[in-house]
Image (cartoon, rainbow, N blue to C red; front, side, top):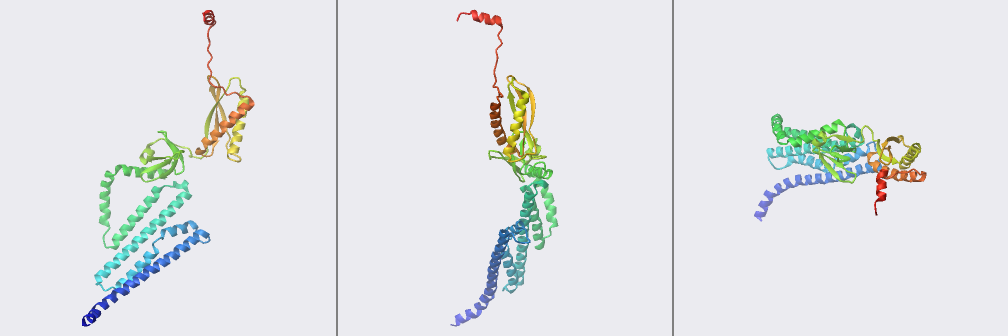
Length: 365
């Protein structure tokens, strides 16, 4: 009994001195979870109903950015206050409070990176004509935020950041020499985006023959999606040094030629009128309404078996021109057949002198 009384007198105060702070900390964690659930539910309701002074896009961004942060802040605040009542020395209490402060700063860095990254993606997607939507800007912004946050954390820990900045400047030279290709691709991608001559969503063709829609411009390469839905990965340095045809600059509309030939016996004015009329009707049917661009016809020369002309057909998007070309060729073929305009296939006429024919005629079979 005396042993139990002694243990009770010695250990009970210690258990109580630890149990109360730990219990308060657990209550703080539970309260943080409840507040986070309530806040997330409220933000989702704002996004769903779209009835708020906060735009739904920003509300959705805040909901995503604050995910997991509310309970962390409440828990850290509770732990910071409880640290004063822990049965430990002042030095340990100071280290605990410093660790909590560092976690606070780091959490704000994380949420700032999330908010700025999401808003930047939303802005670039909404206004692609400014600099184009590209992940390289989002990545660069988040890296800068984390670098600044890391310097703040070091300053909070009492570590001078000036020697680190100096060391980074010297070490940066060595890193840049070791990562020449990576840095070259990074700055090439940055130049491509800032120049604005190639943007995400543009249909481009390289001088090597590859063509497709630009899907993304990242820190190392540019992704191009072909019409067949295959992806072409082009290093940014290759794209920056290539001769590129952008079919959506300065406007999306462009003319593509369709070569047609009619026989020498055809009425060229009638063939031109029929082709122009059919092209106009094809555009109106294809775009379900009026089209502000008109087709053009230019006769280009005398062929071996036909008189050739190019019909320049306008298209609103480069990706639409194949389907538009397919539709027009079928319509024009049907129209020429209906009006008796002949599209001749290649023929060859042999011009044999009469003397040769006479000899051939006298040759025994």
